[in-house]
Image (cartoon, rainbow, N blue to C red; front, side, top):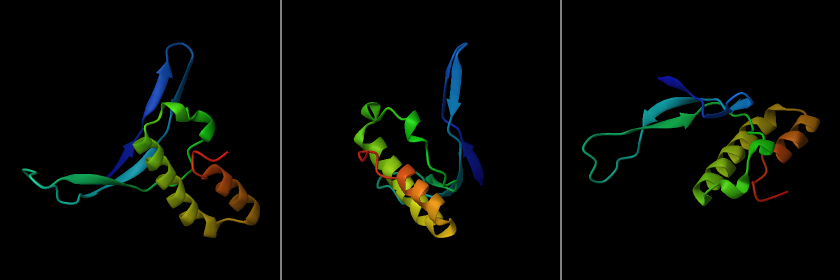
Length: 100
């Protein structure tokens, strides 16, 4: 099954923002002590998340790691498919969050 994951923030009467990715439901790795098998999500959509929308100082290290892994996967998958100018933009858009 494919689902849409759409976290967002809306300020009443002012603005809203939403990041939308498609995810595939997959079997999760076994968890010791679990009462039944679990499912997980595999991200299908690979578009950079606009860094201007991110307050990095508010992210946990796990959240930063997730974003950096997502961007690394997006860059590795998309870079071979784009021209040089787009590749340069992609490299900048997907660089690790701690890099300027």
